[in-house]
Image 1 (cartoon, helix red, strand yellow):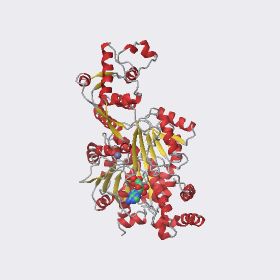
Image 2 (image 1 turned 135 degrees about the horizontal axis):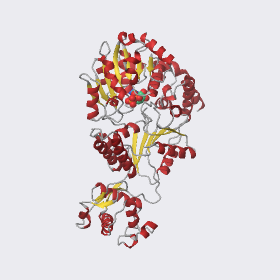
Image 3 (image 1 turned 30 degrees about the vertical axis):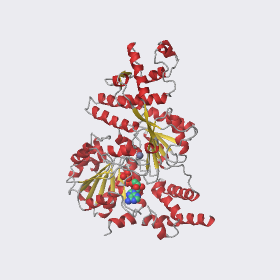
Image 4 (image 1 turned 180 degrees about the vertical axis):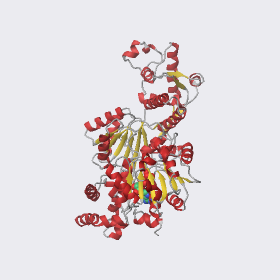
Length: 608
Ligand code: ADP
Ligand code: ZN
């Protein structure tokens, strides 16, 4: 019997296991249940596909998304592994055929949607489960069994009864990218895991560059980034359907190759748009968080969050869809305070709709955590990793905060001026939101200010040399440190807090970290990954890949990932033995593709 190393090399074309993979495979092969927490892109699939090929019986994989199943099955078939899927995308005929194949033990690996797990779904083939030797049941995206996760799915409740109904209990292996203790405990209980091997691999994704920006105009910043990231594939996440429409329309009008995805579109349009993105016909996907789970596209080079998500878990999962093949990729979060307010509103609304589930306080706390992330001046990667329970170093060198030069600035005077303004207004029995306060301090003469006679306040115009942005940053800082407070309600006003007196009466000195001012004329490029132009050879290899993918009707990355093509450009393989050395090239792919790829490489080299 071949070992796990030879399967890794011969079937999947990889030399080494990644962190955690080998332990997980060993545990499954020894017959022990597992619960593995691994971030998106860490390589979960191989953890169960390799044991599936080594175990005697059949492996069933429960997976929530149709597109993922199709993708994984195509990828396996491309490596000559007998695999199939059962979900609602099959026609009646296809379903019957697949079930017949399953009964005849034609497949080693079968993906099943959770909705299909109830007994009645298999009623036409009653003997199948009773006679099939099922060695392993894998539950992908296992957090879907938990109410505490961010994506509870009732159909996941069918998994355990399904396993219990099998003649012999298989090994049960649960995978998720969600790490909170509550979710982990829920998964263990709901799936009745038996003495599971618990493993949480590191959450770090070293090839991802993290940045947070506070753009004055999100659309303008977005376009700037997209121009820089030209021809690269990426996802732009927006919080609502309306935002998705707006952003997508604006981008399309400006000539970007953008498509969209949200729950309000017809299933046909969703499928079409998703395929346009996956098959590289469109490079930019603008979407709500309805898009992405189960999307296997490995060459996503950037994920931009146009709106801040509700919690760090969702953020990390969505951002983590970038750079799955290990190539450098960017994760950019656009932050503004309005997004915090919108999220608060949504959390409270959903609590009302669900009759107060008791989750509100918990969800608001999670929102606070991501707000800290977005406003922090610490290493962003450090922030993320410590959220997931790791103890990272405080400098990663690959995030916008590590790259930015922050300096400690004395803001004592500015704080006194801002808080005085709030006091003066209070003396007149008035209170205003941030925008008006800033206008007063900067000496604005707009109608609102003049009509309310705010220009005769002693504080009017006392900060006319500071930019709106600077004052806003300082106000946010004062609120976060509770030297000022925000009133309740839809339009929160800035009000004094118990600590305001420390600043204006006790003259407490105050410092805050602010980005260093750029010397005049210095050009600022954000993002660390240069817009490298693809070389001539890479372009030719991509063209070949596109042709092969079109005739095989698969997405290009199923044939080879960008990482594999890049390796070909570096190593210029000439023979089948050399071709086999390329990561991602196993025996079957070497046989299928060596001739055509090495021909293109040879042609290129003789011309050069
Ligand atoms: P996940 O399901 O954890 O998000 P995948 O299973 O889709 O991640 O794997 C992400 C990518 O990493 C895939 O392109 C896969 O082929 C690749 N990969 C997985 N394991 C290895 C390995 N040991 N060596 C190199 N690449 C790997
Ligand atoms: Zn950092």
